[in-house]
Image (cartoon, rainbow, N blue to C red):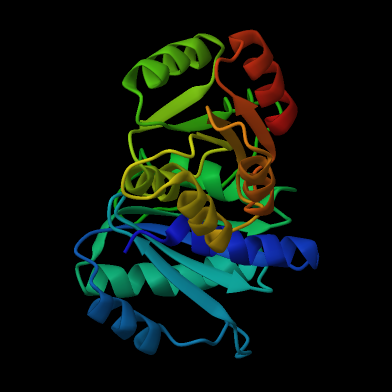
Length: 263
């Protein structure tokens, strides 16, 4: 169970498009199974403090040990009220492993996607056990560096590009095959994926298809390959790629095109 980022991102994007409020609760949890998730859904209920029904979405990231609840149409005050119920339940069942963090779009941030990713980053250092923290976006805070996922079976290319982009201030994650790329994509939710088409296990087309299935707008995709046929170019763009570069390539040109995609 590690689908928290793509599931929540998709729902938040829909709410943002409709300009509707949406609350988010993240809690540090341990030993959360599918069975315990179902019990939580049943026991917590779907009513807000004033008795109205709430559309709720649940997800758990086993790797990060983060339990999340997304509350459609709820502002920060009602999200906080529901978080009190969540905290009491998790403590009573000895599932809580730290603090909770809450936010609501658009009160907490004008960008729901940025809000979610920063909340997850903030939860890396959870506060006192049982504390409910309110996410605060600081406009003066330095922007987080853009993140890139490199998916290439050529270790030389990965090493060169990883060092090059890290020196330019990017956060870089490397994957050596398509399956590894998919797992790391779900874990880090990068701003940009740079992938080859010739990949072991899952090829580049299959990787793009899976990314597109999760969320077509979540990350930009750039193809970096030695395939020069027009049909490969057309198929890549049809699968969701935003740019297509063939080897050998100029690092300066590559960086310029990366900036254009994620600026």
